[in-house]
Image (cartoon, rainbow, N blue to C red; front, side, top):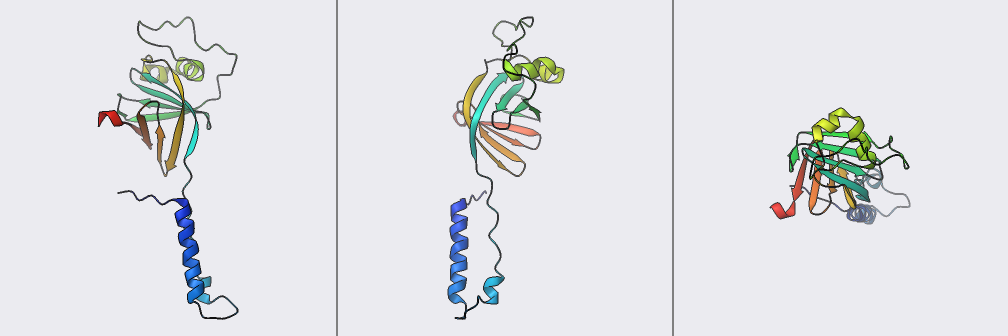
Length: 177
């Protein structure tokens, strides 16, 4: 079971606790030693963030680009879960470079990745062999991301929600439940 505590609730709780201690402390001009020894409030977890993203589904996984960190997440496996996640920085492809390689022709009904993801796919044989061809064109969207410890949660395109824990991933689709 997961208990989520809102940041404002934690601040209000700590403020109320300190106020209660001050009211119960003996009336003196200085703060009592009990109030001086109170435990500080726990740190608040990082806030979820909203950023641009792009996603492409492949024969053997997904590639997801996160705009604010300029990171590619390569998720190897079937449509719903996988045993391997790799991350790559988006620092190779630059605006003005070719978006695709015209010498690479996908089979009927498949897609060559484009832009930065395409550059990664074309220049990294492990990524290319591991993912296979795109089975949908890449699509841009806005995502919500939250990270707690070693688990990253983010909304994919449409109804997909992904969790990445360590080096494994899982896709959760509300329509499949």
